[in-house]
Image 1 (cartoon, one colour):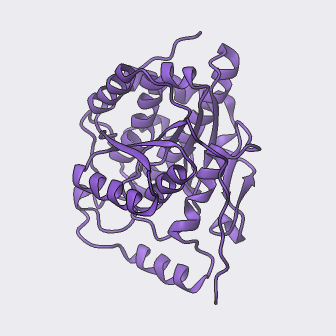
Image 2: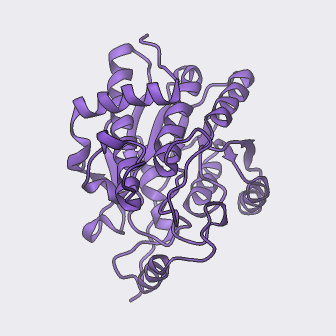
Length: 314
């Protein structure tokens, strides 16, 4: 079935400094390209320098005069996160938009970050939590909008408070769901705390639906030597325009949430098609696991303890 073109128009972002994690390929690269085309200066923090340089070259080929540059970042290392914070604070320039897009999904076995945390929870949530904490002065200076990319996996499930690190009985998909629920609760609590303490930051959430991104493709860095059967099925559905979106449409909810003049703080943006799997981006109701302010505050406290990164009250 032919698929109609789906896109959004970004506002003029000239003079805005934007940081996008996970932008060395896939939908993150598409976000960075579209942001530079709108006039933004885009910073791409990467773990893999070679992939980062290829991404920069692709953006500059597509966007004449693109203002885009690399920094180093491994979200699975809190020392690396702190180092990026040090680098950007030393540069001393306000950040106006932060899109927390990077993530890892379904490693072939239980793995841990450099700090000993289950890799999905440690990368998807704790690494980004620490990054926002280290960048807080720059985000406040830019009165930034922070958009955190969750997943359709956050529709159901809960935080495994009895075993946050999944050391006793590992379930890779429940652990992934936990990482995205925790991350979503953090994004909503960031909004509440910014309002309460006058930080001047606005925070919201997005999810890309289901699309043939690199999350389930071959990922040698986590021991996945070949594409999963799941990603092959998603590619087939996407190519036929059945339910799933594309890499190009998957980037749009985050771009709408991060740049849209009418995008709401504390809201969730996703595809609007059947099952919220594909289609044009739009606001949607928060998933049930994300609706408890008490649970969000608990996640925040636990994250401060685990990362040793604290946010000032004022």
